[in-house]
Image (cartoon, rainbow, N blue to C red; front, top):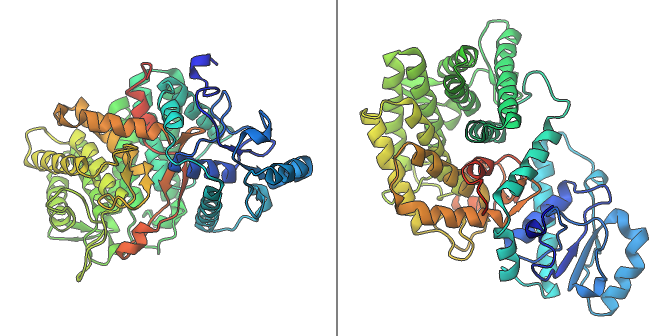
Length: 491
């Protein structure tokens, strides 16, 4: 690696956080994520990863945190380090992923890991660690964008190794990965990303075919995609993937992708409740939610792909029924509106409708009334974001208008990605460019091992305090790689 791309010698590490001997696991990545969120200067190797062995004498650090498996090798050294005034937490070691029995419900693993590791990180602040260390943050910002993309390429190559056949699930992170890889393929013209994106779409198409083949009556149901929803009710996942297939079907001139998107999109409508052309997802129990905008995106693409005017009418009606209660006068979005209260401005509750609005604009005639309404909504959101960007780090917060909540990266990455797409379409003026570039630089300070730290976990609906206390950690499939594709000249 070019020495200019190495962090070694560019800042003074205060914490030695070792990865397990075989390299990072979910626990070490999560710990690194939390320390990066706080701007604590941790030791990094030439490859921008945690070391697996101490690269220098322990007494050169203020604190040390090692994996449990290293106890036999370093226990005496850590005892001596502590006697000399270095900080080691009460537990002394962190448990590795392999030591913790995995549960069948994934969120128990990820939520528990995030909270446990965040607790350990807070304990380490007793060791006199510096928050938002300027030399460390500047070192992270100076990383070349190409080197960051290389880390994501390595992650994807490892993730996809040996994978084939239909996609096992259609979660949000699968969708955002598909979006990012599509942009990488289009903008880089790199054969790796072109092949990766096409294989993803082929597996997605195959999973649509399997879903219908597995259903005796030929109707799609959420259980076919590994969903937990009750059979016969709608979920947003088919809307996400249907729109993605139609969008990339158009990009690649691939009718098979487009047809699979139409098929799954029509199933989404069939399993929803349609009243006065408004498409209601039944699981929301009649409450307006910002996530309903994914249905608007789908309906716009169905109208474009089939030419049927009924889908356009549904898109317009569902847009009006969603934006009026959910988007505030300022431009931020409530996650849900109950009959007696509104939810907080959770970060992704604003990011998601911006993303789906951006994608929907690609399907709409530029002079249509709905396109103009989308443009107005998006401009109001970005104007509101100017008032709430964190001045030190450039990211937005977990609850966007509450600066005392934690920094949050997944929504920030999505807002940068959308600004880039809107710029390509000529929708946004230059007013927001400096804000977005500050956000991009902020994302570089929490980027680790091909993913983003400071990312909120999956979120249900709740009272304001619920959103303020969401578990957060390392997230492998954000929209940040799509933003990198736009900025591949040296940083």
